[in-house]
Length: 111
Image 1 (tube, rainbow, N blue to C red):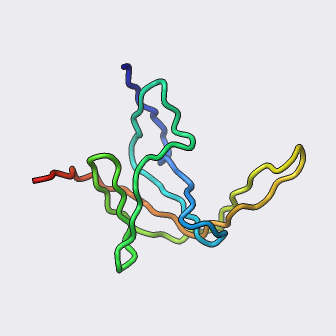
Image 2 (image 1 turned 60 degrees about the horizontal axis):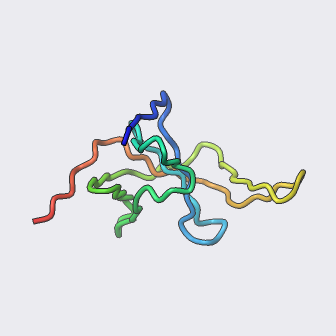
């Protein structure tokens, strides 16, 4: 298999549905690159698991890596829209905060 890196100057951002309602969506911002094989597209792919602890601190598990982040309020709300017809769009969500993961991932080691 050939592997490649997607290099982006800005931090990669992923929009995800936390629950099946308009007010439970979030924006995940990652520092660095996400690597995947050439034959795999990241659109709609399961990348990892996001958990919030009792204090509201986000934890992201991607494969054998654990990242701890922070929650930040967006300066301006961000709307997610989906195309319903040829000329019609529907607002699916309004995002008001994002989860930022800037630190290096810690390896998960089972003993």
